[in-house]
Length: 544
Ligand code: G1P
Ligand code: ZN
Image (cartoon, rainbow, N blue to C red; front, side):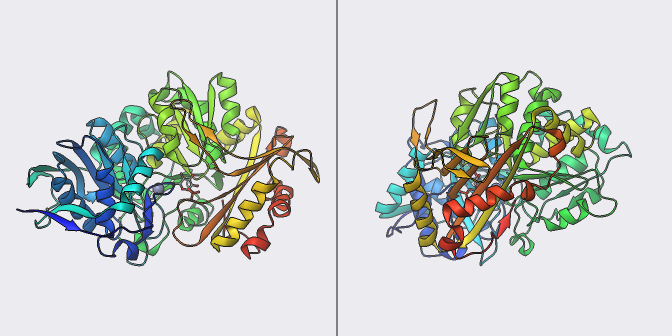
């Protein structure tokens, strides 16, 4: 077995985005493209000699190939051991769980989350540090810097490793441990939630549920947890067979892309509870019978009821939410007398707060919820949390949410996405908004008066690091908000996200459709930003 030093040329576009490096599969298939980035990761790490790395991905096209490349390169770069999920699989939260449980040096996760997969789809790679969470910006910047000056990578001249059975193998001087991708994660879930009570609910004869795996990674996890451990019947699971192209779908659990589940949940004889997860298992959508729970409300409800679950019965240290996420959780934090942290978009900003014990539960409006049990958002965790609440409270999803609104007020909320628009136009829109900042204060738009407008900047309360330009906020005197930002995860053109929020304290006025309740703010967003002019679009592509 020979160690090879292969010479290579830098690619200029290997800057990690909101969640690692995401590109078309075809981009990753360019000569040495993947190898360059993997070597850049390794070059930016200190102390990897003899250390243990976790590797796994969401099973999309190119996953198997990439795992083999990474194994050879990890061995050639001096890692002592790689723990890899059978078949090269690990959901994102399961990878985080394994990194933490076995106190490994870090991990590489192969995923482009919910982006479509297959030869013409997307692929992605990201590095997680020893706390199980995404590498902070300091490290991703270092990787990018390495990628711009790379001249050689290290690998071994060896055949592929057999990843399909649980075994411990040798690859050069490195050990490869093929692990069950599901069991450690399922054990963790069982330690946090009352499985006996959920089992009783699911088998009570008066409760029915559906979980949609969207042909992505969560199918095997859901089968083990819901069927084997919680006694659900097999018809509980939809699309539970993972596929390399995700069945041609777009596994993003929202009202648009999880249409099959939505039709069941809004159809005749709808089940009591429905949920879906995304490509790599970190997102979740929660539905009741003919009822959609916005992710922002879900975060608030989970936080307010956390004491009803074994894992959180002692209470929460604090709650963290990304800036564009609605302020519903703020009201819960306020009532609980705990701190609320507002961070930039992206899970990596929660890591320090969780590590420092400042926050216990975190969430994003983009269908992401999680806690300090791992350092990623966690789709099945949120589903089990809801099931635990339903098992204890024995009320419907809709009743739980509406009684929450009665108690705390309702934050009407919606996000409008303009996907794949011209990058220049989108850039101009944001630049123009930046110029307006500060000058809007006091300006009236119909019933609304601007209280402040700024470009959100965040100072991490733990390490003092500063992240600027995280989204333009326009806040109104009644607490309503419009937020504009450009996506950092897209692979084609630009995606403009417009986040809209309005607070309603009066229970008699909490029953509106969110788009109706927000119609005035939607109009103001157009007036302030000139969306149609800059994007050339008359309407958003996705409304959630
Ligand atoms: C999107 C979401 C963000 C999430 C990220 C990774 O990022 O908005 O909340 O953390 O995906 O799942 P964006 O495309 O907006 O940069
Ligand atoms: Zn995801």
